[in-house]
Length: 506
Figure 1: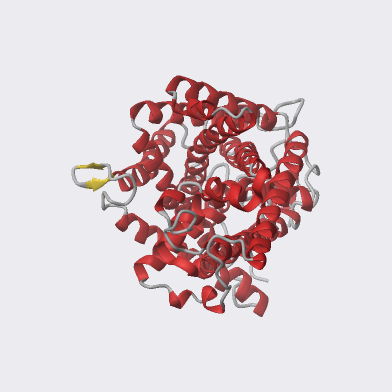
Figure 2: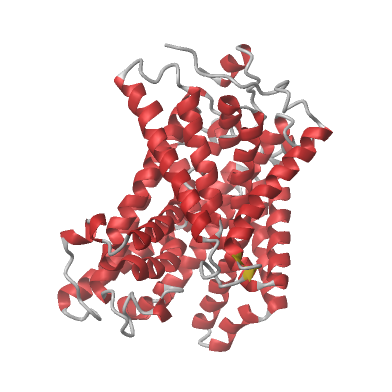
């Protein structure tokens, strides 16, 4: 059923003026991989995950992959029936009504705006690191510690990413093909070089790959398992950007869903390959180059690139820079199109629904996302760097929140069809139900754990961990904004624009 057909049936779904037919399957997958940012994510996540689960890192990556795949299947089914740039917002509204839908959209917007500021900050760190390596001057790398320089450079990165996104999907695809290809080539180079060192006996702590590494039941404790899965879920986040481009896809009903699933599969292959190479080369000990060394956990590639890649180590710094910069640009796609949909359906001021006549992109929403990300970064960096990083840690709460809502929206929307065929029972009921429940359980588990001040930077307020306060606080802020807007313009909340409904029985 197309958007036009659903509009005729009275759902309220309608097109928004985006540049239709500009994104094919390859382009969508490239943008999806870019949004996940494998090079940046791996350098930041490998060390902490090894610290929790040791050699069972591949098992945890696979366990984290399962709920992502299950949720991706639910996203695909919802997109087939209702291709719409609002994704979580639109689908949860159709399934559960305007209040839950609005909060689903808020979860996506809040998470992506927060991570935009973090991606820009990481890009700045690696930008100055790369310059210091190129010019052989270590002092240049320390410029990122200079607060005015750091903030100014971060704002430049956000502005450049916003400019490319504003110019529409054609500009976005061109940039992403270059940046994503480069980081994948470097990651492959790193993995192959590491395996060659192992084969030649020149690895730091050569460790034979074992089938036990893939056994999730071999993890020492449930707490370590849960912590590992929580990290693993975060590293897959971002693939759903492929669905927000549905109205710009060559085949709106098929391409976005297929791209989402392909992105998750491509990412798990990349992660497993690099994880195995890292463990085989350096082991999990706490030696100088060991993956278990706490000093190596902040950026594992910064430690291993030289020993593994020799004189070409600078390419890894460039890859992480390109990864964070590419993700910064592609991540704008999701909040801009969700804000566009919310403005279009009167869930936000109508200005958010504006489309650039020249580029056919969400003009106002893209700029608004950039301003929000820039403002958030500047405010949090000036207030407390610890609070900034605690907010990044709290992202897991928001990710599980809106992914879980969307997965369960699939179950509820297709409830009349759930048992009409074996296919529907699996793809429209069982898979999204399991994925949604897993993520909502992780939401509760993370919320409870984050109440402990030791979860994160150690900051607290009245004995409650700052990660919990920030994570739940951002979600509650959304609830307050929703209530305020419902009083200002209640049309959306009265279902006068977008109506609650369900898929008809087949």
